[in-house]
Image (tube, rainbow, N blue to C red; front, side, top):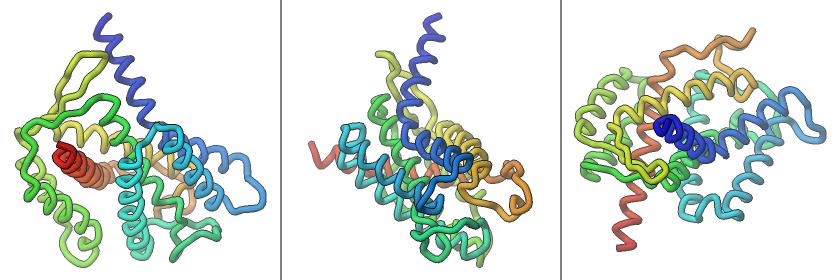
Length: 255
């Protein structure tokens, strides 16, 4: 019974950490079912995301430092979206006033919501890192993973080599977290896989409600290919490495 209680408590903390993604999914569903007046759907989504971000900082659910991290992810995600839509990987077929080269500005918030989840969960579960690799290993690895999302269109795709390198670099690394006063630990690599898998599930929900569209979903919605888990896994690794590095830098600065 205690294990079940701990699992429920852990799930509740995770659910609270997912507040921003939940608002995005709810907005996608509502605007898909009930068309809103005056503005195109994509612009309403942008307005909702901006109001949600403002409220989270105003209410204290997010700190100003976390807002800086989330803004960084918004820019990183928007850059990736601009390139991927240009290459035809996916598209945003609906109209919108606030679009850049066919990419609605709300799309950056979908990446920012991942950063929001990581920051929230980090604080709520009192996350600590054990045997974290050197800064000089982590930063080049995160950079190489992000750049591969671009370069594989012109060169070979080295995602599996990068995945193997992640396992080697983080083989001895663990993450510890607190649930209702009890500390637990998990291999870093396993946490990457779990987060990536659940984001893939979220991606299926998002495409179902028309957040974006893959070429094979142009005629009718279909399940996102399971191979996309590897892409999300690598993106989660980049996200986690950036958040972890910034957290460690801030801790050293505060000390």
